[in-house]
Amino acid sequence: MIKFDFQTYIKPFIDENKFNELYSKKNEYIDKLNSLEMTGWKKEIDRNTINNIEQTANYIKSNFECLVVIGIGGSFLGSYSFHQAFKKYFNDNSFEVIYAGTTLSSKYLDELYEYLKDKNFCINVISKSGTTMETTITYNLLKDLLKRKYSEEEVRRRIIVTTDKETGNLRKEVNEKGYISFEIPSDIGGRYSFMTPAHLLPLALNYNLKDIVDGYYDGKRFIDKAFEYAVIRKLLFDNKKQVECFTVYEESLYYFTEWLKQLFGETEGKNNVGIYPTSMVHTRDLHSLGQFVQDGNKILFETFIKIDNTKHFIKYNNDDLHTINNIVEDSVERAHFSGNTPCIEIELDELNESNLSELIYFFMLSAAFSGLLFGVDPFNQPGVEVYKKEVKESLNK
Ligand code: PA5
Image 1 (cartoon, helix red, strand yellow):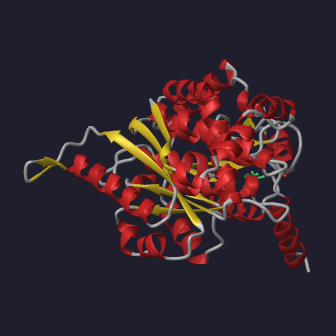
Image 2 (spheres, rainbow, N blue to C red):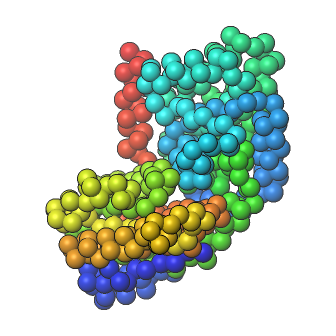
């Protein structure tokens, strides 16, 4: 269950007439969105794909000690942030999933190589294009390790590829070697690919896919709210609030805010427009960025992601700690609002898999609407391609 408050700490910053004018164009924007090609993420995922994912997850769990997921950006953040949100802080006993491919740090990769030497591991390399530099380098290094340890047939059993159906080097390799493989549909881009094997396979090792899949499509009911949120953000931007801070009160949601940053940053940030997304984890960051938010340059608005209830009851004196955390959250919102910072509230009744998945759909829908309201293509990322090209040219010199 998700609740939205777009009123209490927002009203003074939004011109009601402008809001009504833009909001009245909702159906026009829904039609615009529906007419775009890259909206496969709104379609139902087919049952066969879910069955194949579940079977492969069982195969991994019964044959190997851990899975190394290799991917970056939209081929990484969805499943990683979801897993971070739910794994235990201590003594986590979930099936071991290691993420690699997000860094060229030789320290990280050297230590990973060392760690995996004596492990019975397999790989899931994930890349829609099949050409991303960080993913390719990490994949080749770890494939090399597999080759040192195992026969050709055994290496083949340990590589699972998730990529485009037809194009790219990875698909070519799958066709040559016969690896287990999954498809990222051609009408779904990286940051919108949560409901594809790119994220569902790593998650199927530790989570019930039914909760995730059902929760995601439940998000469809919030289409009006998603558009309203997009309209409010656009009007705040026009009112010189050009930075959005996603604020959470649960450390485990830190990577969810990283997922949000990619989603909104890559969707809107083009043609010299867009809201700059940032994040804070409270109460920790109240003792660092809190000063700026309260008292600094008034360029910012905050989107609070609140959690109403928890299963973790800890008493402090006679009060429940989660209630104290929520009281702090409400107080901070009032304080920031008094310091001229608009605050948007989005509240989950509790942090569970179906709620988070529903929230993911809500934010993807809002981001897509926002892109359209900013007059940009929500689904391309020409800026990312520029750096990729530069790096490719430099490395090939
Ligand atoms: O959202 C996007 O499209 C990008 O962030 C990509 O996901 C990222 O660059 C990785 O691309 P690929 O999956 O092709 O390796």
